[in-house]
Amino acid sequence: MILLTGSCGYIGSNVLYELISSDHEIVCLDNFSNSSRDTLQKLEEALPSRIFFHEVDIKNKEPLFEILKNYEIDSIIHLAAYKSAIDSILSPIKYYKNNLLGLLNLLDACVQFSIDKFIFSSSAAVYGNQTKLPIKEDASLNPLNPYGFTKVYCEEILQEFKNSHEWFNFISLRYFNPAGADPSLS
Image (cartoon, rainbow, N blue to C red; front, side, top):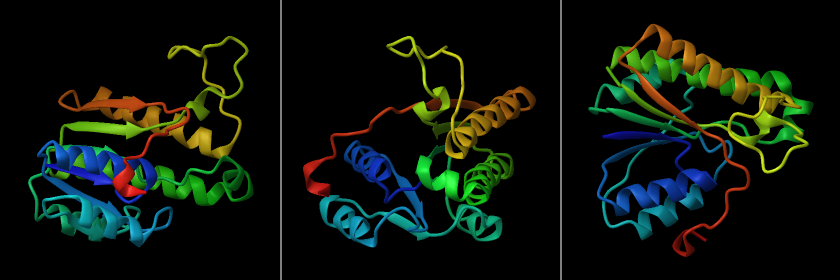
C-alpha cells in the first residue's frame, strides 16, 4: 500500500489518478493548504475504487502516526510542501517549518512502520539560474530562494537518512514545469 502526501494538489491528484487506475491501493493525505476540496470530490467521482483519504497536516506527528497504524504502508510518495518561490521569500520560516518538519515526520514514520521506499517531490529550483542549458541532473545546486533551499535540504536529509538506514531506498524528482493534467480532473 502506498501513502501519498499532498494528494489533492495538482501533481498529487494526477499521481493518485494514475496509481488508482493501475490498481494500486493508496492512502491519501492532504491538509488543503495548497489544494482544494473540490479536487477530492472530482477524484472520488472519477476513480472507480474507494479513496482512503485523511485530512491531516504531516507537521503534526501524532495524528499522522494514528493514521499510519491502520494501514500496511510499504511506500511513500511525498508531494506535500509549500511551493511558491515568491511566497517563500516573503515567509521563509513558514517554508522551512512546513517543508522540513513534514519530511522529518515521514522519515520517523519510515522507521516506526518499516516503510522502506520513498519518492520525494523535489524541484528544479534546486539548480537556481544555470548558464549551461539544458540543465543536467548533476549540475551544481544553487537555489535562489527559501523554497529551493528547502528542497536541497530535504534531498540532503534523505541521503543522510539512507546513509544511516541501509534498508531505506529513495529517489528525488526534480520537476521543471509539470503540465498535462488528466481532463477528468479539470
